[in-house]
Length: 91
Image (cartoon, rainbow, N blue to C red):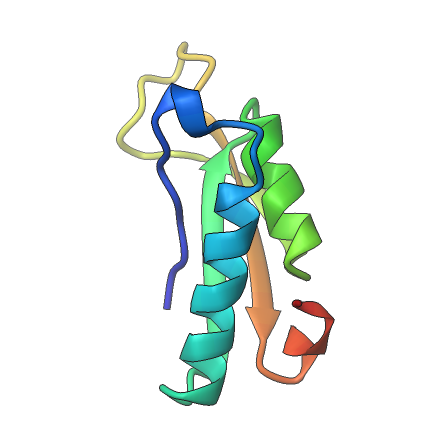
């Protein structure tokens, strides 16, 4: 299962991504019985990486996105993961 967020610029930096991601993660683990959740973003997207860490996800690896041009600054991506046992840190 994958979790992600996309907010319009006016909503950036107000905690909405963290709040929504936390609620979705809890719902997925507690109500839908997900065992694992993944998330990925461009490596340059520091705010999203911060949210991933804040909701308790762990860095897995860096990879080149197959659908992004190799010379694009958005090509390098990071993959994060959390499993149901680790979810306790999400509030």
